[in-house]
Length: 133
Image (cartoon, rainbow, N blue to C red; front, top):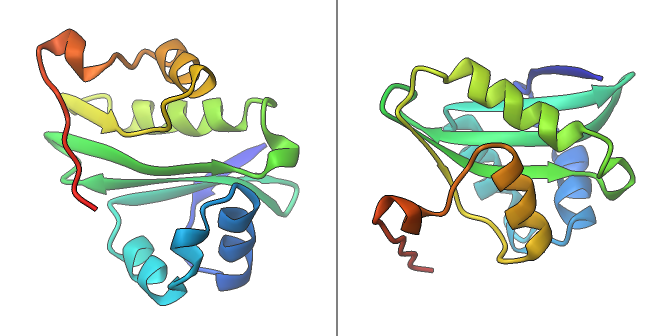
């Protein structure tokens, strides 16, 4: 597996990835998603040979806060260490940052994954989160 910065937005492969994991709200407006990628703090991609297997996209200032906006892995590559490698790369690159946050699905699997990566619920810090959609 090779992890490298994702610099050239490929509408086809990104649409395929987001669709494969069921995130079609993003693919309804690929132009907005492309702008989001372009304005992100960092986007990393995992490749097996030359095939995209997953991405992780971060927003924030890179000094005091990093928010993991998206982490997606093609279903055929899930549970093969791709997501773990992508998160570890972010944690390594931003180890100086005080707050690395994310929002995720409320399922036992996703909660177990992020807890295994060292993340803790905001409630353990005496905080709560809010979202407006």
